Amino acid sequence: MTKRTTALYTKAGHYWSGITLAVFIGFHLFNQLASLMGANAHITVMQAFRTVYRHPVAETILLAAVAFQVITGLLLIFTRKRSSLAEKIQVYSGLYLSFFLLFHVGAVLYGRSRGLDTNFYFAAAGLNIYPATFFFIPYYLLAVSAISLHVAAIHYIKTGSRRWSGAIAVTGLLAAVLIITGFTNGFRWRHMPAANEQFIRQSVGG
Ligand code: HEM
Image (cartoon, rainbow, N blue to C red; front, side, top):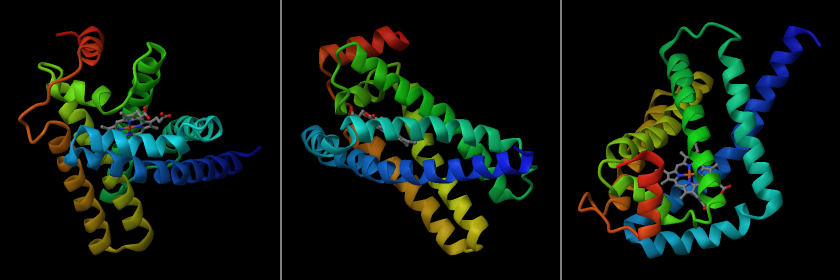
């Protein structure tokens, strides 16, 4: 296989795994926004969505898409020099997303292997417990912002539309702030179940 064919396959792999992930992320972020209506609303939405993405076939495809997205994304960085601002935003937001996806999905799978239900309280524990909150607020805020910046940059490179790319970026930044607001009960902080508190303290200290 020539270098050019490999690059084409890598690009196609990144595109299709990205589309697969984007469908999941759309529902997933809607699920996170349900936290604005309380923990029970978030859990009810998650239970409904889990009937689809926790199906063994769907989950295998999803986890394969995560692995593919991270690997092909890192490979694509080395294919050519990115010089415009939009290209730089695409690369740096993608780099953060690779880091986030590895840790986020790794944490969910580890939590599940330890017998925890990785529901609302699994993510909320990191956001509400001192001092872990100083790590988890920027960690999630940047992840949701990075998604919207990554998509906005790609949209700008493909269409040149400043207006729509700006709208995508601003919607994502707003969603990021609303999700943190929902999870922390408007920064009045939520009380966590003992098992989730213990998991966070054992995993990140405190
Ligand atoms: C503030 C933002 C986020 C929160 C609070 C959050 C929370 C969670 C929780 C609680 C789970 C476990 C789901 C379950 O047990 O059914 C999960 C799974 C997952 N999240 Fe997120 N997430 C956030 C953002 C993201 C983003 C931005 C991405 C992608 C870039 C992402 C990708 C995933 C994936 C791939 C899974 C694994 C699904 C599975 O196989 O169970 N998440 N997340």
